[in-house]
Length: 221
Image 1 (tube, rainbow, N blue to C red):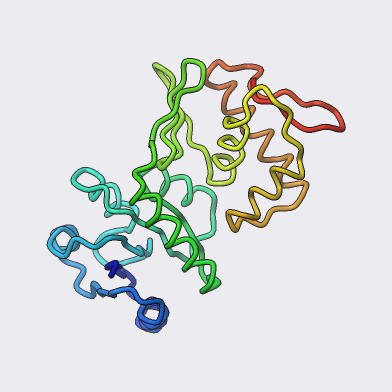
Image 2 (cartoon, rainbow, N blue to C red):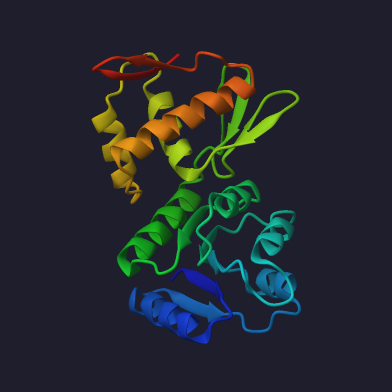
């Protein structure tokens, strides 16, 4: 039985999560003493952590960053913060996923299952594109001297294009891939994400990463 640790200071949310996970046949642990969180995490060694950002004594993102210095335990941020900055920070500090409140219980369970499966299968965390290295879990794209952070949607789009490099990928395919990952974005948002991806690769010196084929889709070069 997989062991999941909840770090959430809102008692009602904590109890809801505990009931949801117990009903899904997970062993559930709750951390409600926030003075020695890092030591407590290491001592119980959970298979996955659900971590809120706003917790006493130490911001959840700071706790995550400190945890990543000593452990690769999968972490899903579950938070009421919906800004892109918080998602980028969380992913750059090593979060495996990020979900906002109020969450859909079914989607949360799917996300947990997906993260645990990736952890079990030990999926390669780093891939290479031109002279860049991409840390998939952290959403970090690095050149020799610089780095940029990809949001979750940007990473999903990039990986889908990367797996089909040199071939045309339609907008419908990308929208379907995002939906399959429980990321519901509209046509406009897809355009914005593609534009941001191009801009971020330009920052790292790749000026023509994604080619548009009018009426057909996109090609990663």
